[in-house]
Length: 344
Image (tube, rainbow, N blue to C red; front, side, top):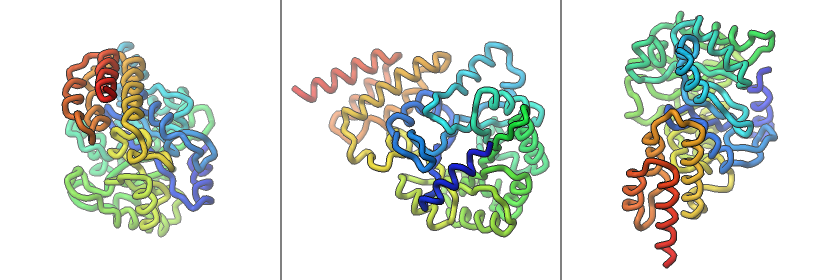
């Protein structure tokens, strides 16, 4: 059941790349994904209605899913909840332990996830100390073992479900020529290339010419793996241009989604969205966050307010008030009062 082939064939028939939502910790949680699916809703290349062609979850610890006590399991499963309108959806997992990856992937399959993605690019030092994220670039054998384990977990009932990988072009330097062939040999359905090294973090412009080279390497090896590019994509139009320039099968958009759940809609963007519409989306997003993720700190939601609230007179003062709130009710009252004041 490789849904990737179905949707990529449909996109190619239209002459378009696939546009997918990046996994971002404490950002692309169930509440925000639901808002994105609603406000970016349009007929997609695979014939369905929704936001991006495919959504990714935040990354989730496979170690935690495999061995956390009941209370921890409950929180992790809450982080993995999703709504039907978010599909197709991929759960992103991280671990250096093949056994834990297999168990976590099996759980995701049982939860109905369309695929599992393995994080081999996160530069967070705490993640790297576990041998995960970008650290896997330095340990190709471990990376291969984790991919194979994920495949076993996803096909536990005899049904094959796709496994993908998100990574970088190298650790301290560009290693694409050696790193990518090793990953291709493991035959993941998709490899997403964040076009920077781990050392570069996001401090330099993404080098999309290396995404083009990744496509060439894939073609030279005769692989069926799809290649996606990631890094510094600011809009749908920019994504189309980068895909055309590199030959990438898809483009992953990340930071551009902040404050803009309309990002994946072909006819809407912040230039034709009113402030009232932005306020409504913010309130809905906040209520969903509170409803779906009661175990998380409300402070995490506030990182979105700067993105939603900007570019108009009084934005700075309004943001300052919102940063003092403790629940969605307070947020709604403050915004309604602001709107009423503007109409006087």
